[in-house]
Amino acid sequence: IHRANTGSIDPERQRKAPLLVRSGVTGLPVTYAADENKLLDELLLLVRRFDPDILIGYEVQMRSWGYLLQRASALGKDLCQRLSRIPGDSKENRFHAARDEYGADTMSEINIIGRITLNLWRIMKTE
Image 1 (tube, rainbow, N blue to C red):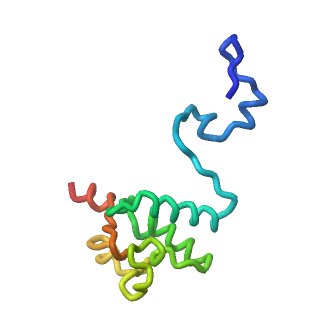
Image 2 (cartoon, rainbow, N blue to C red):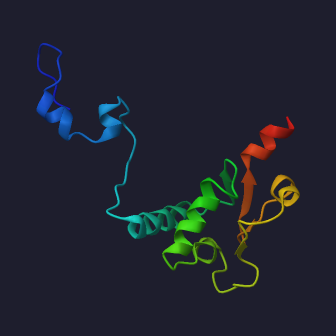
Image 3 (cartoon, one colour):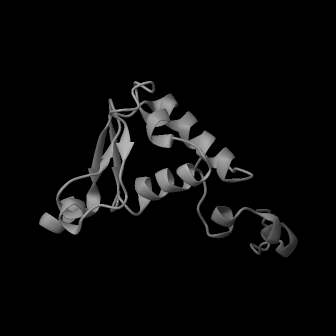
């Protein structure tokens, strides 16, 4: 954003600035994707780049990771298998969104080989 010497923001440049910059968030690397397929590809690149042992989400079955896995499935992609450290093992990589209420409250139905999936909502609920 271009700030004039008077301290005001040029309105034309502000309209064209990305939402995070307009919101006052600066200094973060941000990647923009043209569509959902490209967004999922960028997510996979990030996971491969940093290779985390633990994937944390808030209410992982229906939101966060669960939502991403469902959207990928709707697009014909097996994101669960692609996030795995052993992508060829399709039997062990799995995601079940529709399980009983007890199962959703007590265990994660997301199993990604080589990574631990933690449900932050469940951890906070027990504290």
